[in-house]
Structure formats: structure tokens, C-alpha cells
Length: 309
Image (cartoon, rainbow, N blue to C red; front, side):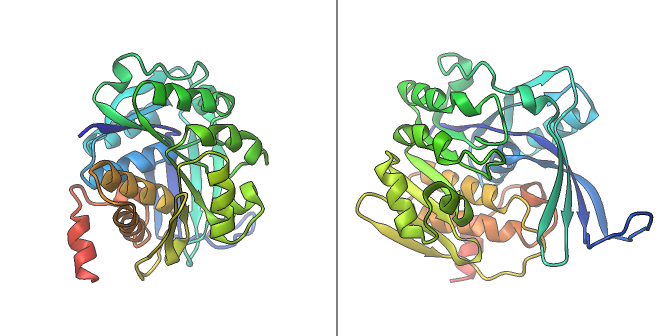
């Protein structure tokens, strides 16, 4: 079974929890100030690897201590980092402020992410060797990749890979203008409800998915948070319930869902089963601080699901 080739942002996160409102010139005591691997590419790859999948990550880090930390943590978890370039400059970094309800605020420095994937991806070389699927995890946060995405996805398919994309929030507000040209080249497109609404104008999952399917996507997977996920093909709607858990921190939950879904789907699981596997990874992540990096290695996801019926 071939692996997943994942491209996306790789970010040095410093997570602060619990973070409430603080006035300038004051001191607030918190429980956690800790570095973690972050970014959509890193989070998705970590979840996939820890769930037992094979994954190679493409991305960029700086030639600095945060970059070395990130590569070390990814490799320790089993992620193949042969496609991670180390370049001169500062690694992308985010301060993640998490409150008592698990809600987050971000302070982000782009660093070398601003130059990532400016020349596209060459799938003809060793980068895709042994891989069966290509996942584009950070369309909107990597400015040089954004205009190249349709061509990259078409090239991945031409190289014999199946394809998927996870949208993220669009700070430029272009949404469907940039997603639309990608849809005909996608076997799977992942979005949460807010992203789907911004892309399609529909707040309900079914009509939002219909717009994306008409645009050319083969399968649409909508992340519904605690409610689970909804999966749409040309003739099917699959509603897959989530798992009720106590939420501590939602950082990386959506990326971990995608990692879990792709792990199961690549191993031949039907769509509904892949959705349930993804829901489980998302539920595991929100129960602790630190996103996918805080998951245990060698997760028994099937056993976790079985315990919950």
C-alpha cells in the first residue's frame, strides 16, 4: 500500500493555556507555555503517522533552532521528512492562546513559509517514490503555492496519485476564486462548515457540498466539529456521528481528522469508516493541549473506537 505525500505549512507553535483577557502592563499566570510542532502540513502528517499510516511531508523550515526542533519531532513520530527543505531565514512561528473553553487566538509570523513552494512540486522525481496519494493541506496560508495549486494537483494526478485538499481559512477572502480551479483535480476535498459557507454561500452541508461536486470534486468531506462529519459523492450522503469528549484544546483537531481519514481511506476503508476513524483522531486531539503532537505514538484507534461502541 502506497503512502501519503503531504505538502503544507510547518510551524513552530508556542501554546499558552489557559489564556484569558489580559491588560497591558499586567502579569497573568498560566498553566502551560510549551513549544509544539504546528501548521496544517505538520499536524496532518503527525496524526497520520501516529495512527499507523505512511506519510512523507513536503515543506520548508528555517536554518534555526525552531526548525531543528520541528524536524526532530516529526522524525520521532515516524514522519518521513526527506521532502522538508531547510533554508536560510526564520522558521514560521505562532503564539497560540487557548482559553478555558478550548477556543484559540493566533499571533503568526510567516518566516520562510512566505517562500514555500514557489516553484511548484516535481512529482517525477524521488519525492513521490512509494507514494499513492497527494494531500495539499495549506492552500491559503502559503502565498506562493496558492496560484500554483490547480497545476500541482493536475500534475499529481498525471503522476498516478489520487488527490485531496484541505482549505483552511482564507485571510485574503478569495475563497472560491482559488478553490474553484482546484476542484476538477480532486478526489477528496475537506472543509469545515465555516469554510464551506464562505466558498459556496450555503450554511447547510448538503447544498454546500452540491456546489463543490458540481465544480468537479469527486467526494466532499465536511467537518462538523463535535457532530462528526458529512460525506458526499454524486449520489450519496453519509452522516458520521462524532464522539462526545471533554474539550481542552481544539488546536490541530481538523488536521488530525484529515490525517485519520486519509490513513483509513488509503488502507481501503469505505468512506463512512474513514469518516469514523477521522472523527476518532479529532476527538483524541481535543482532550489535551498541543494538537496532534500530543497524541501517543502507535495509537490503537480501532480499539479506542470499539470501547465507545
